[in-house]
Length: 100
Image (tube, rainbow, N blue to C red; front, side, top):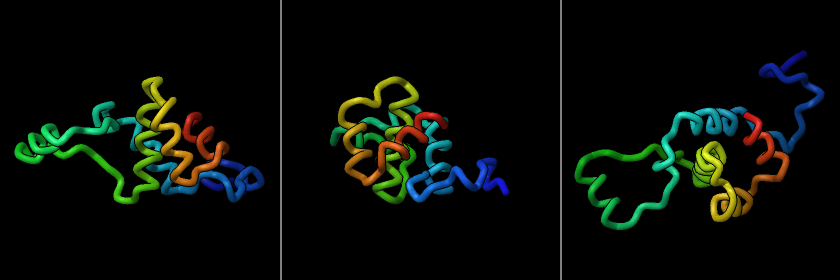
């Protein structure tokens, strides 16, 4: 019986769960600026204008969201790539993020 459009036999413990998949889908609509690190001046200016960027409430999910944004624009190598591994995602999960 299919689960979320995927045959049940293909879902393994290492696959992205439903919430993680939703974070990846949300990242498709996030602007690149939402994945960049901001300096103190930029944070202060955004705070004064009440213009906050989207973030995930969980640091692990935020690493996945940022990776999704940066992968979409072709800049996933480097720091964001390392952060998603440090957050505990496997190569298989990262590959799933890239396919979604």
